[in-house]
Amino acid sequence: MADWQPYREPLRVTLTRTFSIAVLAATVAAPWLGGFRRWPVLVVLMLWPSFGGHWVDLFFLNWLRPRLPVARSIQRVARIALWFAAGIVLAFGARMTGNLLLARPPMAWLPWAIAGTAFVAIELVAHAALHVRGRASFYNGLG
Image (tube, rainbow, N blue to C red; front, side, top):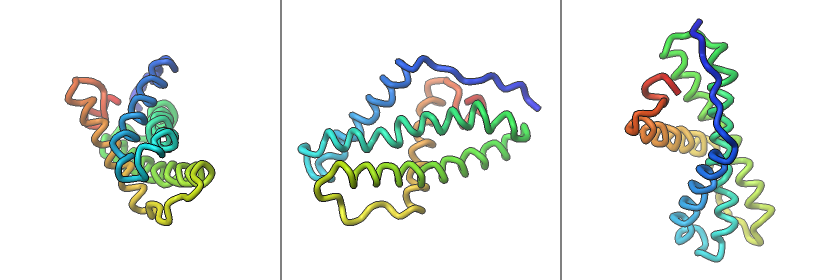
């Protein structure tokens, strides 16, 4: 077993990063999802994958990874499976939040398989950005 160090980050840093991601994603998505009048609600909905995704990664790094075999292949498969399952749960949370906050919610929401796959893709892109910057990521096995 490897001696994994717990990941810690100040809450202020987490909130700044995840809120910024949600604001940017809502700004990009607003023209296609009802216009800028829905922007505030879209920011809240985008917090599900950005802020929720942070806690999913913390769960993996601090709880699940230390309990798995050290083999990188097992670590990678477990992380992708966790991301897929979490994507489904986070999409469900976003859907329920959207149903509460929108007077006329969209008729179609992402099917569960697409939601899980989309979250895996989001995480892979986010970790690619970390890797390019020389930080611990999924790709180098350090984060």
